[in-house]
Image (cartoon, rainbow, N blue to C red; front, side, top):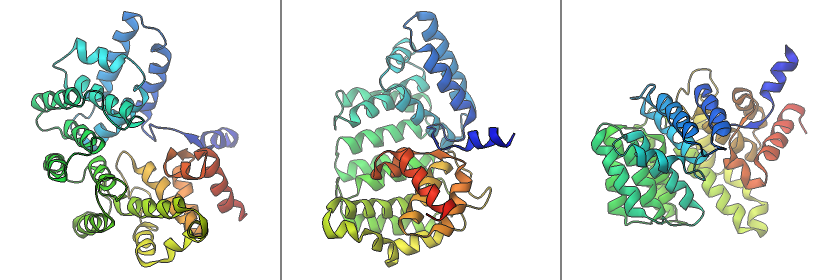
Length: 318
């Protein structure tokens, strides 16, 4: 039994994180999407529809499942096929729109931004209480570098339906970075305003730490001497305080309950290792149970290799 336990805890990329139902669906989709048979398409649609209708008003879980499926199916015809066959199905419309945004990520722009946004608006009309269509509009607006008043307007639509929506806050954070459409000062103001009123275990709790990792990566990307001393970022006030605020609470069993908690624990483990706070990182690695997310580990190359090396340094002191 110990051998089986160790196998389950071996580091692995798991987009579904600890969502077992989503993981099972993805395995079934992988097996059935290899054929274009109509019967197989019907089976896939039925399976996706069934999962997305579970806990349909759990917006946090819904966004996680929709986002993972959109990434998984971005190279497939299935989202388009489903939306075409069921043009008044909000799940189909949002999944298709989100998958188009994912596909556009590598190109930097949407082929049909108007069509993506129109699908989201139709889904929003069908399910006016659901923030997820607005989340996809926000992602599209960020990708298209829309003007800030427009983007903040969409962001407010999400928050009116789901106050602490993780995807919305992280999308806005990226949009406001100097590398995109904002500035370092805007990032600081955005994070400060959130921290002043956010519950410590809200789904968007990782926004501040994510901002610090962004800044750390920006220093690494400069290369040269600055990259050599990048670790100093985590001993400076903002970096150190961001870690201090979460290092001991996030690893408490049951403290983080949102769907992407394991993704946030990956950020914590990475940041603690970057700061050389290995003793504190040990608890984060234990909580993760081997579940690895590509970001932020991929900044050091292959994410699984980077994760395994960091975990080995913690467990063996090497």
